Image (cartoon, rainbow, N blue to C red):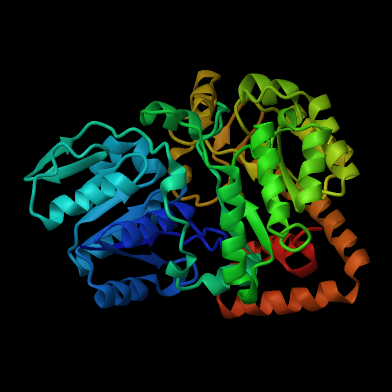
Length: 482
């Protein structure tokens, strides 16, 4: 059976190279008799309807899958309507939003089935049943409409042996060379799930929505070997960095030691730099030294809020200012570039707490401070805290915003969405100006030559100006690890 899986990114963000559907399509193609293709709309958003019709007409699938995220829900609905109107094919929804909100998702008129949780095994059984004209009743992880009724099968426990899954095949992406051009990297993940329960994140709701142990690490040496495999395959096409998406790369010391040892043994240290997420309370000098010696160049660290009450009582991060200061100091000492993530305008935020975020970022003077706008994602504790504290969520505006970068939807205390948006612009103006100046002083004329080349290509491929500027400062040429 053939299935087209759609990446519904019409936002203009050039970084949405979705690993979830890459793993899913790879598994179907390599481990089952079914065939899957990926229809990616990221670089085709101005002609997405024509691309959709052409791709479906060429591949001739019997079913269409759409991966769902809450931020792209309005795009997902439009794409599903187009599929139904032009092709009349059944539609299966999967991904985070469908898993967290299965009742809402199955009630969408265009939805024929919903996959809850990991999709590799559940979708295989579902396609087997459809191909054999058998009942879908009893297929764990699948809800489906049959003769006007919804069959709600029990949920399927999460896949525990994720090492048994095949390495993701990025050749399934037609526009892979464009992703590599703009990002100069590929994505990797050595764990599924996260052991922490921060209130702004969808991981805690997912733990409650899908049964089974949530945090599942891969074998660290096999993880390093995958990076070698993909680099050998794609370095001639411009891959220059391995970008890991493990929520806390430094969680387990032995796992980290084995990964770093294998990375060095494979000859990747000094040849393929890599980037990791971490938490300030999970790193020390020994771990930072391991990272630096094995070729890690970029540390991505969550500050979230400059005010400890917001960070620890509201976001439940449980990390002190001093822990963040110590982590930043260690990373700088070992020559690691630091990306610091912050959120603006969350539950119980005030003008004073926003200034705390400004002050700590100014004090730490990290290489790449990033300032997201807080999003009350479905079923998160943070969304509940906004309402419990008397805040207001603009649900209408929320339904049209497609990014964590721009647009506030929360009113709390003395903060209006407009104030938060103005504050974010001031933060960007100050900190991005500092970064640009540093890059110019280091690169001199190369900075401007790279900028012109990058922006001309962005214009040619009709990438949004805002995203093009942002990713140039992070990913292009000399900026990739600076």
